[in-house]
Image 1 (spheres, rainbow, N blue to C red):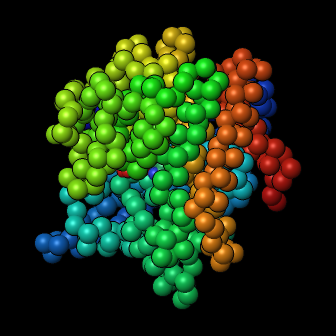
Image 2: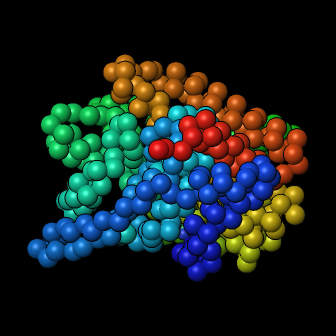
Image 3: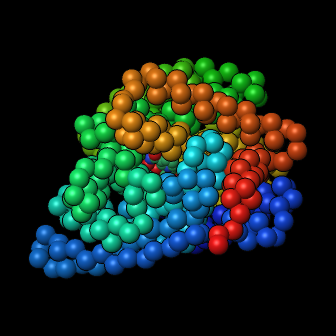
Length: 419
Ligand code: NAD
């Protein structure tokens, strides 16, 4: 289990990151007040009749942090540790993330506190549909567009789309992204986050003069984001030497066979016991001697307690908020190059944007077209952030926040205050 929640409240981290970037930007107090806090926060009660006939009530949330630059956009998380503060933090990061990659969306996030690993498909479907009907006043293709996050997937999105469409009386695919292809999903969406992580790692290696071929890599969290990033890094000739999921961690000093590992994880649901690997302590994975560390699980994986043991030269934040501010400072002082979450994992929301555009136009693109457009967005955004990092001599995280917050502040200024 991660050291989450016991250390830093994710929302406090989001606010601290905001203040640091606002200081670097020289943002005035009025603008800070207007863009720092969520625009709307909804807490909902989600009763579900479970398979054994009993009724269980789940707590759900949807937060719209900002709609200054367009509809709110952000995933829905099903996890036992979901709290309102976590959802507020994730919504805040979505605002800056969409602005960093310059797509016309604001930031939102949703979640239900539940343990999907111990729920049947039937229970999950009923919980998803009831949660959707509870947040219905907020969502819509021009208002707020959910997507998958931890322990939600294309099937979850299909249930949300169906529930929303049934209520409105006609089919509205653009209300969610990350849908199955057969329902208006985009080719390349499922692997978009990991692919975006890969492109930013390529850029970082080029900047630092580290050859990706032969580079050693450790990946914490072998889910959607982590496994796709691992696969592309493996294909590029890097050696993914250590991998973990919530049930354990494994290593092979010569590099794990990632396609085979993905195959096993799909069938068995875990990475431990993979042939040719040795088990390691999951906590030790973060300190594993490697060139690139990819935290791709949850928040607060690296804290003041374990940051000094991290030896990777590049830290690519596939997860949202995997480093606490204290960990950031320690790693910066050690000379680590951090690709911050709002840049590193922005590939997911970028292809979500492409999906929404395709749904709105009823015209669908080929996979290669999606990859080419994604690569362009990710590499342009990396260069934009790197320029601020070098010109202003600020950490990469502050540079990314300066870019994102600056764009939102500009939108707010031009729009003015209603009424
Ligand atoms: P996922 O549910 O597909 O995978 C999460 C993985 O993390 C699972 O393999 C799980 O076993 C593992 N995990 C959970 N707790 C762990 C622990 N303590 N130690 C090691 N592994 C652990 O989720 P995902 O979509 O890949 O999301 C992972 C992270 O990436 C989250 O922070 C999410 O917010 C972020 N993210 C995802 C997307 C996306 O499009 N999926 C986009 C942007 C950011």
